[in-house]
Length: 355
Length: 252
Image (cartoon, rainbow over all chains, first blue to last red; front, side, top):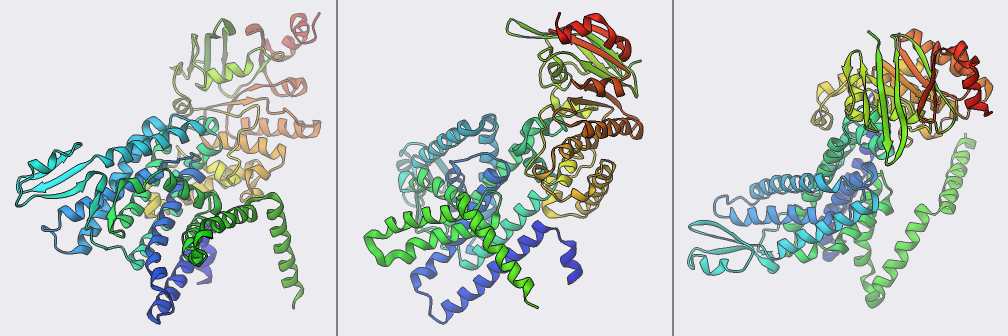
């Protein structure tokens, strides 16, 4: 056991600790909900924690490691959500098992979001810094706009796709069924997302990104972030590795989208707006660029906070904002960083003084 | 055949002729210097030889292969490595990882192999670590392997840049002002390192330098650039004693 611990590199050890932490929290929450201590509204929030943590980890790969500020990540989430929800609804007759449909939908949603990340990345990743951020924002709005006018229906003749609402009339009145209904989105998706499969997917995501970052590809991605010219000079294909990083980040956002789609009762494109993208970015920045563990913790705290503050009714969002500012300062103000390191020193010394 | 042949290379930025009609050739295992006053176009020559700029005139050949107009990445694969005047390390990565990025092409496995941690991952990573540590110990940096590149002292950063360049397994090494910002002791040590790299790796080196002690100490032949044009080429000692060269540096 000790040997194994020595063999693991620091980032891998950190990942293992984080996974153990997640599992402990998972077990505690399970015990609390079985014994009835946990309120049902908090219990319902648990899957939400998982998919926000997943997308925060995915965005951290893009912002923290690739060094590209994306403020349109909610769009990739929406692509994963709509793809999988459309599938689970359309295949309801063909595949009766909800679990199997969810699983296939998960794969489809992830791949589709990754594919869109790749396609959008080709033009977008030619830009740098602020320009890239603004264009990702624009792409997010475009995708939201398209999903808002997308109509997909199904009848005995097959699948009908249209961007105007003429679909309904052409559907066979007896066997016809609207799957994606424009701005009304998708309703009736089975609630397949649970706390358990959320935790499994979160751990899986964490393992994938940690392994990726600590591999040849991950080093190339970080090298491009640190110094693009130097990376080219040692023979790294910058476009290729930027696209790999961006696509994987988008695919992970797709995973979160799939979970979201199977969690809410009605899935609408308007939910995946600028606010959602910024909220995810706040998780990443608060948790620390380059720290997956930080992203998870920040996502959990900031998702729980509004629920915990519910008692304060109308002051809720005010307190939320003040707490957010306080947490940002505590984490990132130079004085606070100094203070924390001094505190750490003192604890260390006290530990050493003790026999 | 020369290792590097530069034939009437030139580049214009708008109306400005930054480098004009430059020709020289470097033999295998040679230590060649490119000197000249500030703004003479030395770094521009390096940027053309590494594909950062595309020459508007002339060609250059490495071992007889024409590399003119190729991308930086392709030129690196062809065997030209470089360091930078203003150090460009991957500053948020460890010293070891900096060198491992240099090994990117020579020891390779796919992204999927990395994510799935297939057996090839462990074998290749082990080979990378060994090769990188070997290079680091050549430059006396093995103790700092886990340090962030940013936290290295200045002289060590210069060395790490050379180590990273050597990791790409080049046939020609370009050093852009390696002694910039160094004190005489550090420069002395650097000269030893450069000579050692040449002998140990059987390397051919082209360097830009202002420090005349370093140039006269280690370069066998030099080319003097002035206002983008070749002023004189030849044996280091003879060139440095030439009146024209002295005038270019010190003025009338």
